[in-house]
Image (cartoon, rainbow, N blue to C red):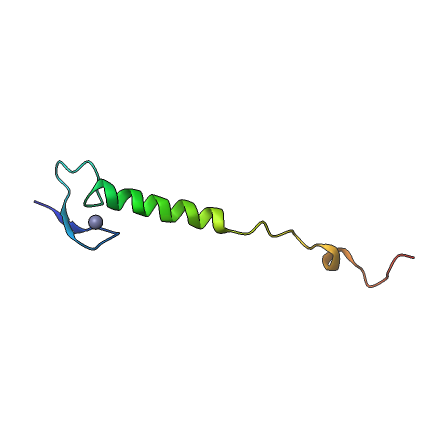
Length: 61
Ligand SMILES: [Zn+2]
């Protein structure tokens, strides 16, 4: 019997016949996916500031 710690709550979890592996339960799996998703959404749409990159040092009139 293989026991692995649940990535979410660290509870030793059996993998055999566990539909939620590597998580211990649906709740933990959902929690993990939710955290991952919200983390992705939280990434600010940072505008690429390329002005300073393209300048050769001379300002156009
Ligand atoms: Zn868990």
